[in-house]
Image 1 (cartoon, rainbow, N blue to C red):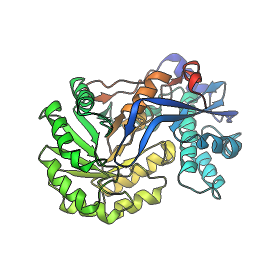
Image 2: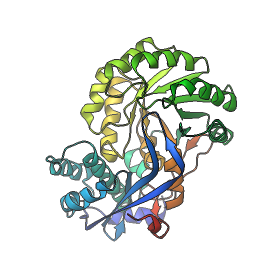
Image 3: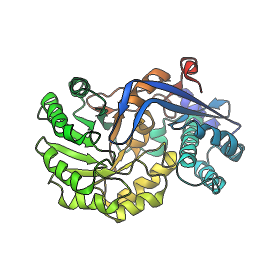
Image 4: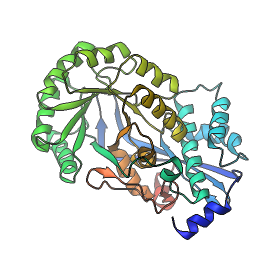
Length: 374
């Protein structure tokens, strides 16, 4: 820790949150993108900045612009004046405030973005990188390259996945399920490109029926697929359990990215629906929510994988024992490299938090983002 960071840690305690600002930016994708069940050509970034003790923090989520409106109309008033050191207390106050709005969806995403800004603020006030505040259990977190959209041609798919492996990322994920007749050929092409040693993951985004998913699991296993994400809808817990029980040996079933509250994750674990649980700090209640999900995973001896938004997940990923890896998602990597100073690049297939910078280690490039303002 530098002298300035150490001095800051000594000076700043029991500081009230003085200001919260929110803004939104819609950034076009670099080409049209689809997965098994959805199409998109842009991504909206919601930025939250909280101030206390002459410091300003950064939290964010990828979400609908309505998230920013909910933060402005409901949550800012709840947060102002609270002790910046008491993040869990503020989190509980926000959850109470959205009771009539509904706990999941946009409301949970709004809470997540604010919670992330508050953890970043607390760490900055203490002069600590967030990983040190949370308590480090590892030096770096492995990543997997994620993209391989169903809108990509075979050559685009091979180029993206091949480049990740060539850069030292030893595991990659591609989308399936949009055109089932093409899926096996696309998986075969991916395996031919990345070689025999790299891990290959597939994600159907819930596009298959149960029996379709079982058949494709067997077909994909021929090409060394070891991770089958959302083979059926994540709401179909019995279907996910069926895939776990009857799928090929060595192929893990993963789901959970759309979880907003602890009860969702508890039901998924109690059903024995997944080999690996996924959670997303920008949806599940920020750092506060992610820590609670990790506790469930630890109690059930189930590994946890963070979903998208890699710059959000590096510090908690190094602090939460059940975390296996981070999704290095193409769209979010591109945006974070464009608009955040301090966005990280994998080294030997892992992200290492910058422990010389306080908080999440990120600074928002507002001038660069302004052309995309909503």
